[in-house]
Length: 132
Image (cartoon, rainbow, N blue to C red; front, side):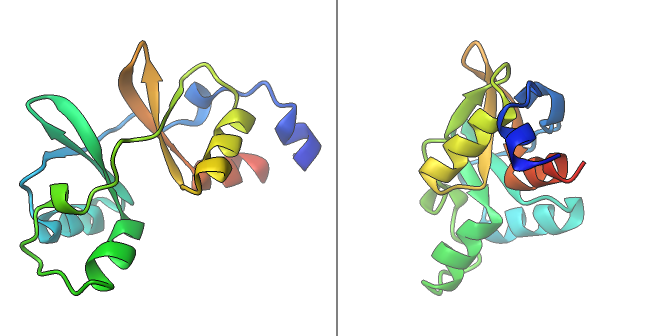
């Protein structure tokens, strides 16, 4: 798939998004979330309180917020999460997702359906699609 094919693609976000979501309460420690990420081979966990989405913690948050600031491993994720979660509707094109990630300088988008987060799409998902 060429860049032009990618940009004009009718492939939708819902076609390549990850549907399995993992979320934790805000008081979960950064150590606990790091273990979840390691064991699950994932790069992001959603942060919720009382079933309301508050943000996302990503592998990048560890490098830029925890390690660089020498925060202790018992720091609650709500202290370092990225918030609000930037989203895209499930029926938008993958080129729209790529543009939003580029514009916002992020690598993960929440995927929504009528305002409810139903999945995640990552820059890796987009690159994988581009190489097909």
